[in-house]
Image 1: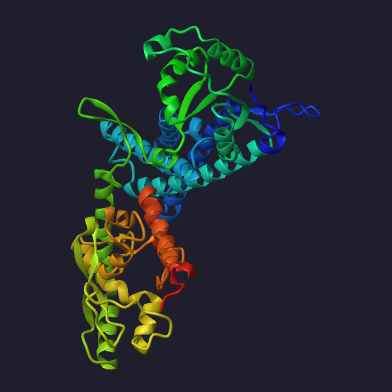
Image 2 (image 1 turned 120 degrees about the vertical axis):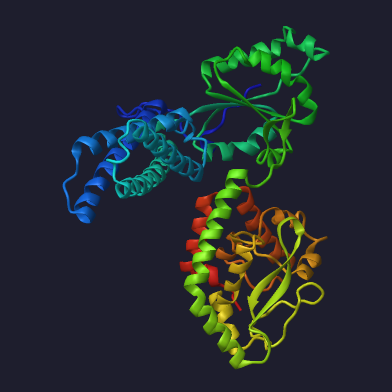
Length: 486
């Protein structure tokens, strides 16, 4: 028996009200692409004009740069269309949509630059103008995509746009559990249909079996005209999925399957090949070779510049520490690094005592008597972590990543929190996603460590270069990044 979703659990059906009819999604996506095309053209042409007049004090060579702006705008749109950015805007998160937009800009400018070399026009095209153009277009694409993504979701929620129609097939309780998440994504649930009984024996027999239950599902789906069909199957149902897939292939809709109980695993898995074997890759390395190269390159450049620029400050801090109390200005402490390897991180001494972090470690608490007056200032401003720029240069740490815990602290929670050591699948960082979200200070309860672990795993699973830049900016300006710093 099919179940109709009541109006409280989904957006209203697209009906005409006082002459108003919801817009077709395809038409809206076409308008979004045109808007982005126009925005890129305006950004590319305006940035050139401003650069020539403000920096070079000359007139813009219109014959060269106007066609260039037109070509760049079309290249960005063609790349976006080719990689299906617009058709995925409804089902993907805003972060993904913005990130791939920057990728489209980068690829478009690379193709444009290649064309200039092939046509021997590279010498005529100002390098400064090219860089300014790239930066301004990137900023505009980020802004336009963030705005259009928000407006599209809001318009779908207000029933101003006809959303993608989805039919759910499975047990009612399983289907009800996913309805809210699908509706929040801007999808419209048309109906919930029961999973048919698999009446035939072997998969080969089921594939050709004239099962009336399959025909009934097809008859129910056709008038609904679904764009997508989602089958929610338990382990016992999987043997009949092949036959159900063959039957539903008669409908002009995308077919999806979600094994019940495996939602969290599927969130990080994908279809892959191991040798000649097709597999479901449940986990993968957090960063690709290109990602690691990009992250390491940025670490080397930023850490080198940081040490040179901050050298006077580091020397001044070291002198102040020596004047205030006995002991070394800088010491090294054992921490867990990438792949649980032991690293020794550099830190400014902020206490009257020095602990190695491996055999002996006591976390700092508020008003800790061990902390010196100057050390309190260093800890509250994060200056005590600056010597770890040396660890970054040595390749033991990154600028951004999960903060390295002392080994003794990790061993304390090893059997209480799983998977605690998954946070070591990337290099530890001087700052991290957990820290800028206020997870600092003493972890005297399992709940505090669990919250910190949740942020660290989110960072690993959603890493992007833009996220690293966001964390660095939040570290510099956000008050939450300095909360509980004592």
